[in-house]
Length: 336
Image 1 (cartoon, rainbow, N blue to C red):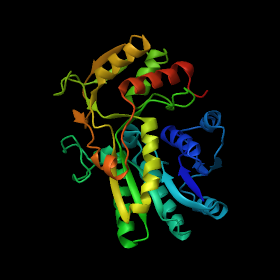
Image 2: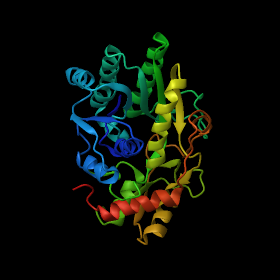
Image 3: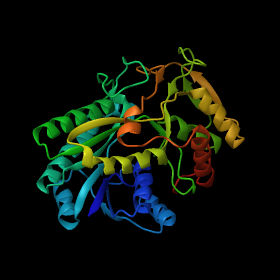
């Protein structure tokens, strides 16, 4: 039996593939390579000594997905594939709804056809919207402020409806907070196309001279230093949460949402200062106006992950920054 990993050549996907291969699982990766490269799988092979099966395919292509399920004995799916840039989603909403929502519908339809009803879904803390107060708990009301967040929320609604309609489904929707860091080997890490959308890759690219300076959006929030506070989690801790979720599916009848975060908040300037401390490189930055929709403080209540998945974050902020800097300094141009 094999695990199907959609979007398995991407940042979180590739780190999860490493952990799965190291655990002895048979892995099949499907990715359309729209925002990633098979070079990540070359590095995965360097780390693990194993190479997953790879099929270049789009999850929106039903025939291609049927071919995958016909060829391989798939037992469980971890679904990462999706467009993920908040800003871009406001400029390209149709592409986001088509790729993320339609793609998931196609995947679920094919899974149902082949009687594969175990799924771990890559969701996001964006589904908590802007009106809940941290720490964020799974029972809080959900909403979204941008098309990217809407796609995650719509997919969660679909998954709950699907599980309610058919008791054979076992689904865990992992609501990520802010993944950062890289594999300790320095061989794989976050490799965004173009200008990074997330804070730490931007800081790292400033540190290696690819970008001139960081824009800090807002310094007048009600936080420790006026800058936004987020719950940063090491990508390897996040990857191990997926292994724990796969193992826990046998206990799930229906669909459940689980936060994956540390439960701690760190400000933008704390990240910048910690990066300078770890790397020895000064990070040039300027204060810019707040971005619409940004929230002062977002961090998780991770009790459910601790109790149900028997998972907790093991790596601290020093590890996250150190591993990011190792990856970026050894790979200043990413995989190129």
